Length: 116
Image (cartoon, rainbow, N blue to C red):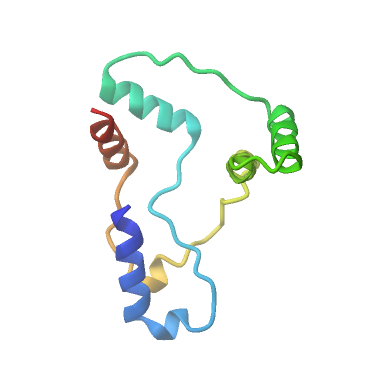
């Protein structure tokens, strides 16, 4: 994502705001429902969607780690996202000068183009 580069440059240009600390930044905050709606809007079609309950996801994650499966970390990330573990009250975007970030619409457009 180009936003990673933009945020990195912004952080390097503001050492007083970034010195010796982890930064919490993002392009945008959204929900899985909003992502689905945007894909459906841009593709002009209704998507067939299946859902994995959180408890089932936890089971899959545990099993993947126990079996040393290469995708174990993917299950962990999906669980963290499902639990809202990456949602923060405030980000450091403002301290970095609020660089212009991509939108959900732009990200979906790029994802569709990459598959075409």
